[in-house]
Length: 217
Image (cartoon, rainbow, N blue to C red):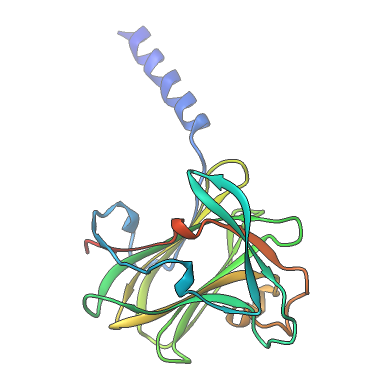
């Protein structure tokens, strides 16, 4: 009996070592949000529907996880802001719980990535992910249309990361804004500002990895 218990303990220890680590940021209002079942996935269309401001999507003729890889690169420094956006994402009802996720890979020039959930401006929630250190670099919220936020950075492999925001959204629609950034931590609310960033900003992204999922409460 003692031998069996010892073997089980060894197996458990090695399993923990081999498992991938995940960084989580929680505002303290709710635990274990990501364990809920998915009710449905929100249709957001393809990259032809994206709004591009100051950035360009470049097909690098390569794939990862059977998805095409694109480089998002800041190319127009005359623009005040640089980002990609998916506009008018319609939700089933206000107060629903949603998980927003996407898979990206930092470049040598840029390790940080910003995501914004925006209602009617200036109401918004911003999160900046430090991919190199696998942490949430900063968050900012204006307005009370979302609550109980949980933010995660999950390393996959080969330098790729999954960025996730799990939250309750009290709106019938929102705008999803995202892109590379290098702003200081205290400027999280303006992560897309060209004035606050340096010029060399780019990141690899899997457009087909972007998911907006309605979750059980």
